[in-house]
Length: 627
Image 1: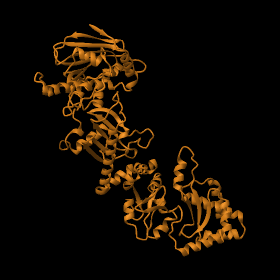
Image 2 (image 1 turned 90 degrees about the vertical axis):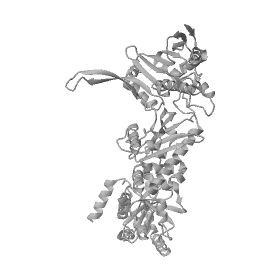
Image 3 (image 1 turned 90 degrees about the horizontal axis):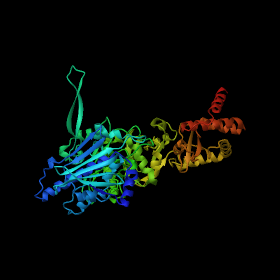
Image 4 (image 1 turned 45 degrees about the vertical axis):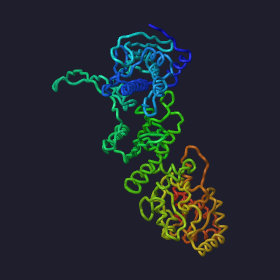
């Protein structure tokens, strides 16, 4: 038996790998299976050009086994195997990969999609085991050798008996401790679960003898065990099958099984891209939002595979936040992985894939809006808030991509429409896109200033989501038409004569309005208006922050101190205006102050703003009514 020490650099690297590089112990099985798959690929490749090697691909496989009593797990393959020198070079020198060297020696036309390129995955097994034994017989050698190591102290190599070429790796599991329960890897269903999660699409069958318990007979309560070898992996992922092999039901069933959803997806999106960066993707738009979708802990991302091996369960970089509802998988051969294969290196390829996926999703949604409106409306009612969020997020950087996808309720159509549809239906005399914000369609419909816009024959967009006005503000204009909040500033819907008349009324009653303004610390101005039609009072705003925006800021956990610059408008044609003028003329300042507070509180209630002192206002109203 030959005993060897790891080089000092290898000792440090081994310790680093066991304790730092890999963050998830479960992946040790993925790494060993991936190495076994590489060994099978190498043998099959050699057999194509070497007449001395006979290889039937259908006979190639990976086998798993475990022994609870001995606390061991074995991973075997009937691949190319390793000679004594290869065992020393590949396993004795950490981070030297035989697979990488094998791949580098191939021509571009011959290159296989071999997985292990760093030569460190094997050592992840030390995270769960305190002793590793590797028995291997090279296809080029009559002798078999065994490599054995207990970790950083070194390794030994000796001859062993092994009839067939290939490699068998035996792990002796560590004892359980307070930090980790290693016995879980001695459960057949846990092993099967790990294979399905990480190695389901390895192109060779992964087999294991499963133990099942069945009733001895239909009338008996006695159970009998029987053993049956099962293939644990699917081998060919659904996204790599040709479209004529897969039905809609197959795609739907895969989605429901893979993403634990009881409902079918709303939309299935498939892609197969060849080029500088090649990849296949299978994406789904769910029919409903997950329960935690709008919660802080929700994780977006697509499952990322490299040559059929799961690298990341949720790669957040593959989808922008505004498409975070999309679920699915991406499989690429062209992604540079980091040394642990748990995360990606900074990659131009990844960025290119993400950009293509974003464009693909957007085009599919645009197509759905155009050709299957009912389905799109169903989608938008579920995920429209996220699209609107994408419009204004990052200072509106993505608004041009998304503005054609947003929809708002139309007062004329009485249904959701796009901004493009609104503009298309505008009359030649209409210069602006009018909108109103509120908590519901019904409440907006009863807002005081809505009547003025409707009387002009103009359509109104009803904004009922907290994100809506921020979205509109980010877009700013559409095809040269600016957006106009009907409660913010002058709508310019009155004639010059009407404006002049209103201005004279406000000038004439300047002292009255100043007195009322002094009694209301939360408003910047009080004025008479002729645009309220039948309504007595309204609270409007001026400036960049609207009343609806203020509500959003007020709901935030930290008080940002951002307030709307509000104006109390009073209908000059309403009887209440005559009452106010009379009280001021009679110098009944106390009664005028009470009326001012009541009117302001009414305007706040109409605007869905809180009344600061409802008890005081209630008493004032009762006093006024009782007189």
